[in-house]
Amino acid sequence: MLTQLCYVSSSTTFMSTSELADLLSVARRHNEAAELTGMLLYKDLSFLQVLEGPSDDVHRTYRHIRNDPRHNRVRLLFEHQIEEREFPDWTMGFHNLDRENLESLRGYSDVMTSGQRARDLFNNPSRAKRLLLLFRSRS
Image (cartoon, rainbow, N blue to C red; front, side, top):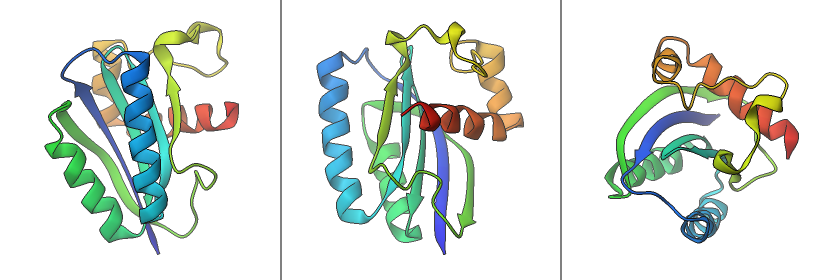
């Protein structure tokens, strides 16, 4: 069995394109070594990420993220056991949503930009999963 874990967090500072690329490069190397897969979305200083893989490695990575000074307000949306990965092709898929015309995407919601909608993620975490899967299908 594998674990799938999804969280949201806020960046403590604005991250430039090169800083995001560096973060992604390090994450991909780590995730490959730990046999983790997933997807990371970034929008307006907010991260939404799903991690999947061996339970110990997922939890170790999540603890590291919670202690990373670049993140604050790290909040778990969901965690469960899975038999099969939903993001098997990526050590870390990534989309910088600040650079996209999101309103034109079929099925997109402003959940990462609207305060009320962001709070809705905690009441209905399946919305986060649908959003991540939307971007998986575009990659």
